Image 1 (cartoon, rainbow, N blue to C red):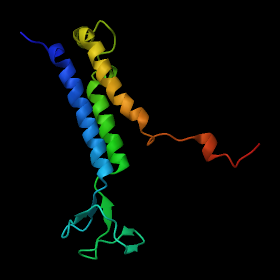
Image 2: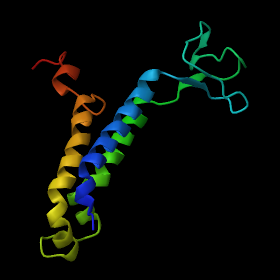
Image 3: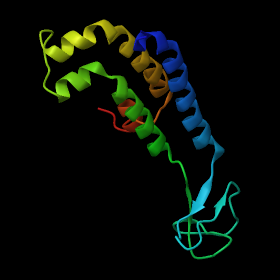
Length: 143
């Protein structure tokens, strides 16, 4: 009988492929009209713009917004991370401690979950979305 461990490399490759697909979708740069009656999609930015952004060149009522924002990409990566974060799952279901039933069952797979979490962490560390440099932000304030 085959176990989940036998499919670990395949799962790791599928996770990497899904993450790269989400990143590629972000970098395609599709813009979508926010008017529900229009829903025009384009990758070219029109010349006409207004205060809220680029005006749709089909309906001239809506504003073109990115289909995949940097924030939604970051949230998707965080979702992938939570799927394999063992410590978070044990805390969430109050299975704290190494003597709990869940901790005992997951112990033999912990290194595999950790490796999958590391895959997601690699891409999260490449992202600069959730980083704020306080020294750079307040460089004008000198004591």
